[in-house]
Image (cartoon, rainbow, N blue to C red; front, side, top):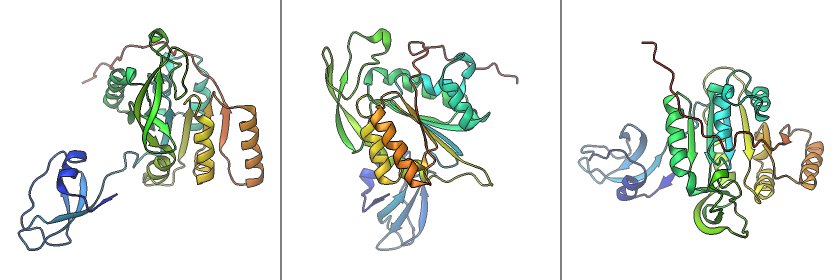
Length: 285
């Protein structure tokens, strides 16, 4: 939600199309570009007026199931969800089956990847998914954090054969420091995932999340707990979880008596080097 936003800023950030609105009465709700709803207030009947506020659509509205992939690398885990037949015996497949049953193609997936090395491939992968009818959004060059702004990220030049899988928010020998945008993942999950509009009907909804943000997982999960967001997620799995942290979560859940979130330590690196071709089914028409 934005307020007191001038039309130049709106045009730069949000609009596909912008047209003058002669004759718009003060206070009327109007559609611009067929997407966003704006509240217009003008001095007279012929004035386009001043834009007071707008509401952008939630990218997860209508999603019954949601999968969040924090530290998506080249998107292999997301692709396992939609095309499990390409990744036989991958450990994560049983978790997808447990939570989403046979409804994987109905899942809306959102990935976050900080390493700019993967930008082009991830954009191509996202386009492939959308053309196949799978709702996928990947935030490229974006570090998962507990604040929005900028983050120091360390790439791993020379390890492209492994897709720089050691790149992270932690400094290290032979790593290169860069600055990337960061996202407040706690607020994002609350506003975009939990507050999404569910489809009509008496359906159960499920949320699953992978945490593979090396060196930062415990910080993010702890803040999800303290914010009250953690227990809205049905299943979380990840590699970088210490015994101390996992035991602490178990104790917290024991005394909460209401938080049913499953926390599973899993390191599914299967097929991590594999960039399978993007193959489209042949049309039957």
